[in-house]
Length: 365
Ligand code: AMP
Image (cartoon, rainbow, N blue to C red; front, side, top):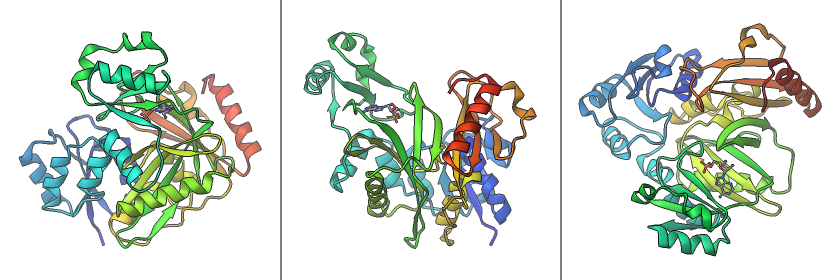
C-alpha cells in the first residue's frame, strides 16, 4: 500500500507527520497559503489560499486521503474536499474545535466539565459576566485563537478599560480563571474501526500562553484516570478518526477540559523518541484504518520547545538520550522553531539531564 496523504497546513506538524510516514512507504502532498511553509522542504507543496478552488482541486487529484496540521483551515474547504476524498478528522469535528463556545457546549453535552464560561456580546455583557466570576477571568476570542493569542486577563474593573474596542467586533467568550495545580494533556488515537489508544499522561508548562515544556509520564495523581476517561469519552462521542489531544486543567479535586486539538499536538512531540509509536505515525495509521502501534514508553521523556531562537551549541551536544528537531522555519519572536526531547530511565536522571542541558545552554525554561 503506497497511499498519498494530503495535509492541509504545511507547518512543523505536517513535516513531522511526513517524516513518520516515509519509512512506511507513504507519500505526502502539502497545501499551505505560505510558499515558505516548512513542510515544503520535505515534500511537494501546493501554495494557494484555502478558498482557491482550482488549487484545492489540483491537490485533491494528487492525494488519496486528506488530514490537517492546522485547525483553522476553513470548514467549507474541508467540506468541499470531503465530497471528493476521505478526510480525517471530519469537517463537523473541525467546526466544533474551531469555536471555544461550541467546544465547551460539546463537552457539557456529554457531561465532561470545563471552566465556567459565558458567551460575550459587547462591553455590558462583559462587565456583568466579569462581576459574576469575581473578576477572576480570561476574555478570549471564540475563533482563531491559539498559543494565548487574543486573550485578556481580567482581574479587576480597571482591566476592562484595557480591552481594545474593536475586539467586540469578534465573537468572544469569558472563562472563569481556573486555579489549576497543573496542566496536563491526553493524546488519543482512534482508528476508523474504533480502536482506541492513549499515551501516558503529559504534564505541560506554558509561558505567556505558549507551551514551553512537556514531561511524561506526569507525576501520578488520583485524578489521572478521570482525565483519561473524559478524553476517551470525547473521542468516542465524536466518532473521531486520527489523533486528538485534550488539554486539561487539574485542580485540587477536579479535571476540567481547557480545549482539544483535532490534530497531532506540540505536547505529543516527545512520542517520536519517547514512545514505542509516535503520535504522528498513529495519526496516519488511524486515518488509513491500519492497526495502531503500541503507545507505551520505557522510562521518561521531556520535551523543550525552542521559541524564537535556537541555542548556538545545538549541533555540538551529542548526549545519549538527547534528540534535536529543527523545523526549517525562519526564527521570529514567539515562533516555535524547534524542540529537543530528552529521555531517561527515571525521574531523577531526567531531572538531572534537563538541568545539565539548560545550564550548558544558558537558557531559562
Ligand atoms: P489556551 O489558548 O486557551 O489554551 O490558553 C493558553 C494558556 O493560558 C493555558 O494553557 C493556560 O495556561 C492559560 N489559561 C487559559 N485559559 C485559562 C483559564 N480559564 N484559567 C486559567 N488559565 C487559563
